Image (cartoon, rainbow, N blue to C red; front, side):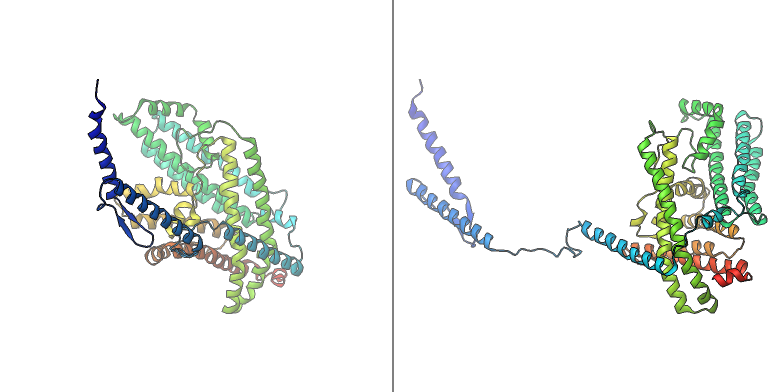
Amino acid sequence: MIDKEDFGPITRSRRRATITSAKSETVKLRNGAIAAASDLKSGPKARESLTKNLQLNEDSKQKCDRYDKISCHRLQESMLSSASSFKNYRGILNWCVVMLVLSNARLFLENILRNGILVDPIQVVSLFLKDPYSWPAACLVIVSNIFILVALYTERKLAMGSISEKVGLLIYIFNLTIILCFPMVVVLKLPSITPVGGAYALGVYTILFLKLYSYKDVNRWCRERTQAKARSLSRSLSCDYEIHIRILLCDIYYFVFAPTLCYELNFPRSESIRMGFLLRRLFEMTYFISNVLSIVFQWMVPIIRSSMKPLQEMDYSRMTERLLRLAVPNHLIWLIFFYWFFHSSMNFVAELLRFGDREFYRDWWNSETITYFWQNWNIPVHKWCLRHFYKPLLRRGAGKLLSQSAVFFASAFFHEYLVSVPLRMFRLWAFMGMMAQLPLAWFVARFLRGNYGNAAVWLSLIIGQPIAVLMYVHDYYVTHCQDDPTIAEAL
């Protein structure tokens, strides 16, 4: 048996330890007073003193709580200050949208009252066709199948070893050169092709040129890997290339219609076609293209007509006023076209073909530099330039600045090619506008940061394009329409 007295000293020592630890704690009062219990004596008096201190602390806390309820100020920043952590500006964004809708509704109503309804379905059709029984642009697009079959035949002969790599390269160079030159000659020499129809046909041939160039490069890379029998080559890749040869006809036409410019042996595929998604994209395509045509005929055409006289008289104040008036509808058309083409149309085609990679654009609207904008607003072209143009130049010893300049030069060439040839005049406005992006990109990256850089990107988009539009319209009028009294009187 253990005697109860054996626990006596232990209990007392524990009690002393508890009281001592309680006495050693300091209590910070709200009014700045600090009560220390370390000098209290042990025993009942110590417990009584500790109880009084605890009661005093409790009373002080209650007083401080009542003071906090009365106080209404604390250290904080204003919500619109940059030092504030507040980031929810959804209401302001909604306000901007409402104001944009109201202001454009007023402009639309004013335009209708002043000019009447200018949208004419016959004029819309005449943009593409001069004669309803003659479709030269569509025939030109159909002829492009010949160049696809030439690339197919060349690739089969190279895969079987019937021709050498040098002969295959010469055939590809000839085929790709004809792809760019043939439609240009037809558009320039055939007057029945309208500027819009010519631009459409040249756009199709330009896309086909970029696709077949990628087709050539990827197949050449596969042949080099297969022939070299490198250790890093996996068996699956070799088998993929053999299967690829057997289904080359279906493969190349799937690639031609797929919403990408970069060829691969196996594209990512979605599991099924979503009919609801497909119908929504189809509705968006129809709705937005009708909006574009309405803005062009109802808004832009009257402004352009009223701009011809100030341009001829070199009245800079009125020219600036017309430029700013043209900037709004032109920018709206550009934004609508971006959504129509890169989201609605390309997603429609991708869903129809079960094409899995739907990254057609990134957040270019947040661009703080010109370079970031060009890298993110058109992802298919950016991937092609990076894969087949920029990186090959770096591997051959070219510097980054030279390679970037070469990419901008190629882009400027194709911009001018798609504008000057359909208009049948060469003024280099689009070319110079693209090349001007190089010093502008350097200036924005060097001197402007954050929101200022983003504002500079938006300003270049809003103001830069209308300048080129006015220049081309003026030159087209002087070249083709000035001698026509009917058109001159209408303008």
